[in-house]
Amino acid sequence: MTTAPALELTPQAMDNLVEELRAYHAISSPLLQRRAQREGAAKYLHGLLLDIPRKAIEPMLLALDGPQAQAVRTMHLFLSEGPWDDEALLHRHGQEVHTTLGEVDGVLTLDGSDFLQQGQESVGVQRQYCGAVGKRAHGQAGVFLGSARRQGSTLLDRRLSVPQAWVEDDAYGARRRQCGVPQDIAFQPKPVLGWAMSQAVHHAGTVQARWVTCDEACGRDTALLDRIDSLGLWYVAEGPHDTQGWPRRPATAVPAWAGQGRKPTRTRVLAGAGAPITVAQLVASLPADRWVRHTIKEGSKGPLVARFAAARVIAVRDSWPGPEVWLVVRRNELTGEVKTSLSNAPAEPLLATLVRLSGMRWPLETCCEDGKQYLGMGDDEGRGWRGWHHPMTLCMRAHFFLVRVCRK
Image (cartoon, rainbow, N blue to C red):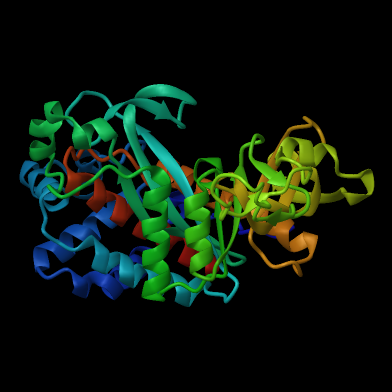
């Protein structure tokens, strides 16, 4: 099964590519209005690609130019207070991604990535579940949109997931002002942030896509799935095993009037049509001949193999029969672990297509892992709103530079 190729070129191989990095930066540098901003972005990109253990401003500039206190202060100001437009850079970035990796049936991927943080001063920091350590910890949470193609994958957009208390609790008012959080910001759950990014990229038309994949955190949100469907996109969304559905569409009708009281006007599921059952029960009812063996990807210990099955089911919307969708099931041959996904793809796709798409969420996880391991994603020391978004934008640009070089 072909998903997206891994990033094989790391910053350790960057020594002879400084001129190519300069040409890459020149594509988007006109969007930075001032010369100092263009120079600051170029230097920060170069620093992110250095082979040093930590990509905070001071060690990067020390490796590039030697000890210069003024240069460190200037870079801090550029990243934490610079009035340059992230959105303009990301729009151009999307155009470049499409030029390099574009394909009509490309995939948009949604996932979260978290960052451990010390102290109380950084924007959005709170004790919350942190995927980096698999438990609750002190940190920040981000939501990312990626582009996964057969030729490669990279990041397209990012949102800081600001905790509800940060937005709505008056006790956080001083910290919001200190961090420069926009005054009109409202609390938005992660699926809402994912929808905002997906909708923006789709309407901008910079990156062509046919599919959207997401993890269970977004896949359990039926409002998000219906919104994706409204864009004419097909989703493959992981969901919890207690998600309910019908194996076939139940009969519905307006109940007959009993002759007393008000006449019924609302359509209901007819008695005897059966209640919805969980996807776990639906999976258990699949016959053995529906399962097909597929290699998902090549892992460090050999190929990862699983058995897949797919069936058409009726999804539940507000306790009511909703759209007919695919239930896609993956069972790990070694551990027996079962993962389920729902897809609004039409009835025609081959199982192999749904299998490939069920694996297209992982490239975004890998992009975030590569960003943290090789490009210092999360090493920046900015505490404010711009101090989170500016470095993240440039880190995404650095990642795509490596993808471009790999393609060449």
